[in-house]
Image (tube, rainbow, N blue to C red):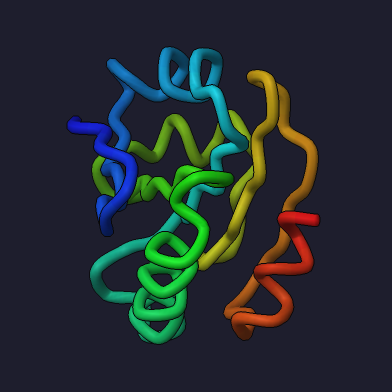
Length: 110
């Protein structure tokens, strides 16, 4: 895991670093629970990159591959992917299920 602000860096989280990143990030963290085989997940990936590039100072975009880290998906009751969960100060504050457009994702961040 590498966190660099000021450029496009979407962080891939694992069991080892998930809690640390969520709890210590100075900005809210938007976590995309996804899988390689998920078409809608691939469809929102460029949208998340755009949001990361445009709002890197106010949100950290992160991804969790549910095939590798299913226990994290289970912990946050992720039953369908993609699921986007917004964390602020270490707490889950919003959850959206299914592919969303850029406007809908930005609305989550308000």
